[in-house]
Length: 519
Image 1 (cartoon, rainbow, N blue to C red):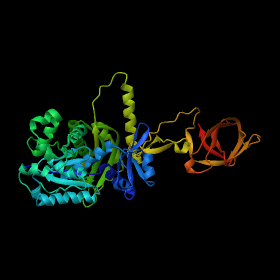
Image 2: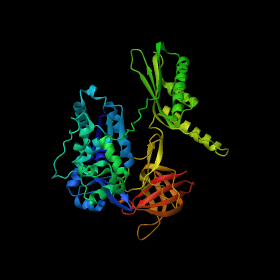
Image 3: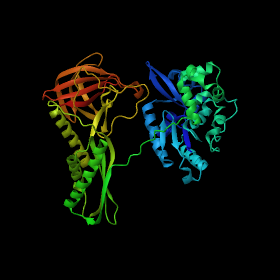
Image 4: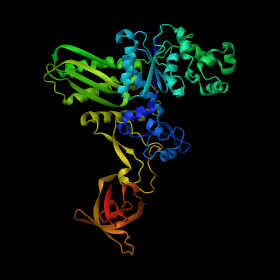
């Protein structure tokens, strides 16, 4: 007989955010989503709920109810990916784990109770594991997925003044004949029906599954739809409900153990070539391309050596991968020799074969050469040595961008309701070279009554630059939350030698700074 363990995650999005950001553990937290230019609360933690914050209200109303309310953007896609990751972790209890979005997991534990000493010890172990992860969940074992889901979700729909339902009611029975009696006291909300069907049942006065079971089966499809009858039969085990289990994939790797240590580079390259042939063949069979490799060299009586290789684009080109391996081995010491070599693909992505048109050939070759250059620089200089600029939503020049490693996909999560930053449109040009921080300089300005004259000369590093051209000013207001003295007037200036600089004056203090130079 089947035994299905259903894990219902009571507050999965909140638990996921709190696990990633421990600072939210002790503070009331609400997940918000921007709808029609308004930020609305979509989920709250128990602390925020006790303060009166409810899903559906605006963020302004939530802050009025709870002054210390913390917020985070709701991301259903990341919740789904994290739910699948949790399901893969639960494969240690049974090989059959199915994901029921958005907040449930099904485990077929029919053959696993012998390994854990019975169903009760297995259930206690799953609950203890989730509690250790600080995940609020209710888990129940039943003969069918529908019955397990109904019992796991019963606490969300049962009224506080009603008779409590035993969560172990189904665990002590060996047949499915007891299911109608166990499910009878549960609300009809536990049958996994859509909202219109549940509202229609409530309007007709049907509140529990027992009331629904006492009605003639012939009248149910015509009044409430065939889906209601199917859900009842699935919960009672009259029709099968197969579980779509998560597919476990073996890692892409290839290795070779040698009888004796090899220190010849030619022999090592020959071994790496054969191992790469196996890895590339497996990647081609799966339709994937490698993004991150790791080569492990085992040495006799010494700790192994590991060489990480990061790729800019997914690839299974044998020649390209082999050249990267040879580049990574340039600084490798082979005096002691290696008795085992293994190549592991740590990360791979789908790779689709595309037809290259005649006019796109040059663009494709340039893109490939650029990616190969980045990969070689990363191997020689390190993963964090090669960076790329990313725009940040700020008008202050030195804060309008950040440098990120090339391998990093993007910026961290943005605050709720804020769109990705775009490159601002400038009416004037900007210097390509900015100083890490503006340098204060001494400037002579043209006579004026308000001390806002145009610059005519400035001194920097004991060298005086007499200006023959000054274009500006371009006023950039500072960020008020960063403090006072932030408004700047920028000038593009050119001295007698033809050198062009970018200088600015702080409006509040009348101090001048050199910020960059034009090539």
